[in-house]
Length: 355
Image 1 (cartoon, helix red, strand yellow):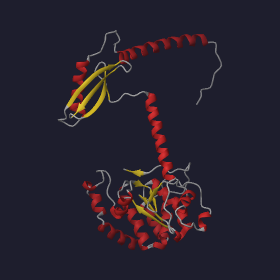
Image 2 (cartoon, helix red, strand yellow):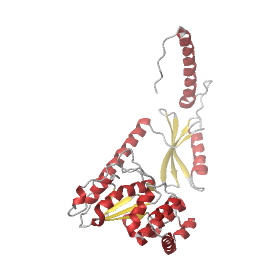
Image 3 (tube, rainbow, N blue to C red):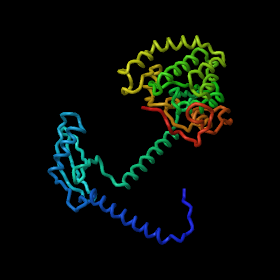
Image 4 (cartoon, rainbow, N blue to C red):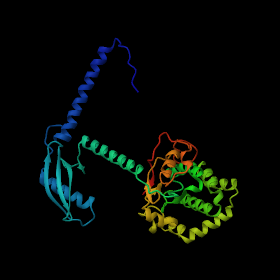
């Protein structure tokens, strides 16, 4: 926020004099700092450069004993002082093969892994953003094979905020198209949100299997809640879903796919970090599902925007002959990520839960 400009006071000249002194002191301090770090002189003007041989020795010891596996051979190939940076550049070979370089301050006290200009960093970042935007646009515009009845598989984690966002976006589409398109929610083959996600994944799977006619009502209720276990119970009761039946189904599925057993055994976890959820592993492997959400239509992975209107348009593009429902109106607002009924501030296909 801009500071309010005050009127000149009679003490202006005195304040200006004090400010001038402060500025001189600041510049003097800045000169000493720059001299010490960049120019290599201490406060009394004595050079702190330690020489190339000393730099090579320090870097070799540092890398061998602190930055690589014990026993890795580090051979210093070249040491050069870069005046523009005020740093020594040290080129090395690791284990006789991998070439790398790093930097050391001229007094040997500061290690710098990589030196890059601010402009270079900015340019790289802009290039990455452009590439990401181009890839997202490519996936949105990808051609989907047309069929009489599109097959839509939506892979989510039940507690991933971006997975729930996509589920909320798809609900109006499922209601609109009904049986004219085969749209199914499935689960990513690992968990990122603890035991509650394991339990709710099983709940949703079993409700779809055992109480199919009530499945979408339950899902809409649960997604509109706070996502707690008590909300799941309340939604089941609201629509007359047998908790006993769902619990029995969950136990059988759990045991068949070793879900809780693998949850308790960290040696089985994906990347040592995430418990497995292999209920639909075959489909995950087939489509190379990486995270939540992943949308696959007629075998092709796509990334449409997550509002119902965009999702309907994408699904309808997969029909050989689109039904009249494709021309009908559905909400164009993007649902908010996470649980609850809300709208996201922008239309977006960004965000996901993945390893």
